Length: 444
Image 1 (cartoon, rainbow, N blue to C red):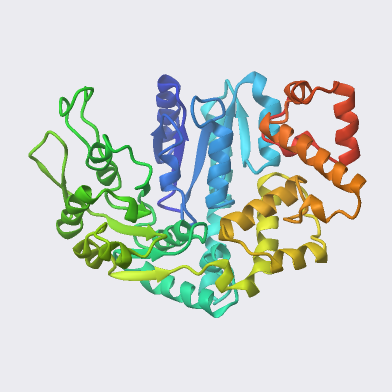
Image 2 (tube, helix red, strand yellow):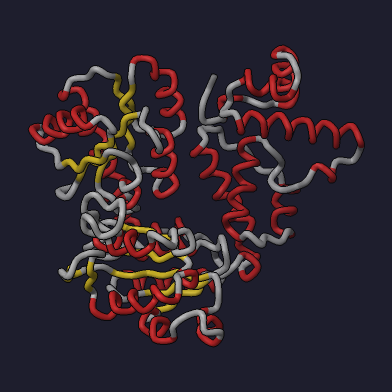
């Protein structure tokens, strides 16, 4: 992997700098980050490197970062750096998918050795994926967007056809159908795969800061702007910009964004200097943008400029035949994510899953798979299906205790105190209902 890179995450600047220098002397290419937020923009199925992260950081800690990386690609090696008192937590992280952990203080040689082994493993993973794709076997696109129905076969074909180009793309689909998964797939099979993937939620941008967030600003551009700042568009140069739910973009901003699309340039707030952009734009929408144009809420010229290529992501109601196999795959992924043993899903549960409506689409189905793996319910069947009062009461009690364990991160004291029971009673009920705090993120 000649383009292999190490993403080093540590909130302590001095330690981050010294570690990076030592690894560069060992021949590695390093990119450093003070937090994990921007790391996720560089992770994809084709990411040819390793992530090294401190386990204790403000905001997004190392454990959370690892879990988010595994949601994108479970086989990206994540090495966690721990303090002396964090070894137990690091061992848990190993069970949940961390490649390895290294305890402070460590020598550069020790860390370099772990990284080299992780790099070799990542190289083999990527080589194996490439060989499968060349041989015509199930590739990454099919793994991320599984399904045997014709609508899914057609979607994967169009993704492969469009992905290699630089064409701006509009992805349309219901909430939870997998629009961002499609966007990431387009990015990962493009020539921009090694560059940033910047996801912008148009509905969540603060109205008073939206232009600064997107275009950046110079020092003094507005009260509180004490230093110049790159906007998200500029930060994504060379990569892909995802505009999630573009229909929520304010009407007055749409004209400014149209200029960006047409001319591929931006101007920071407080500046007259034009900055060239080399980016690909992908937008998603859960609403009919043509109807929004007719209602006067979306610019027609922006719509026609944006949808050079359009992909429609089918809802689960449009591909019901895929639901059983998709649910089983989500159960396997959840078991790997939570460090649980794979368990056979009873045929009755599969039948129930296949017959239910899923208005939340894949996102809702994934939540059902997670709950099944965590033992919170039986994959979507409700407690009311129990045949007798005792069974219903027991199912309700089990759900309350399991939810409290999740809410308090597996720490037992706040659980039994909030439920008004003794520690002994909590242990007895956990044993009775087969609940295990080790399935949770943090142990007491």
